[in-house]
Image (cartoon, rainbow, N blue to C red; front, side, top):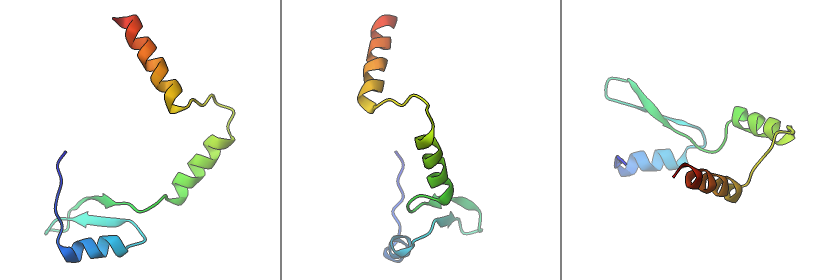
Length: 74
């Protein structure tokens, strides 16, 4: 994984922010974001999914399913 080391000042600004932070190059081109927490859209999607009657599986159930599928394909 690639990583970038920011200056102490940049780290302070990112750490103190309570909103998303845009990362831009010297020319002002948007490179990406540092996100903090969940957006209102994220929360709405989670609430909608929690209220649905769709099948939900735990992580161990999914892993068991994948292991069983892998055994069958070998």
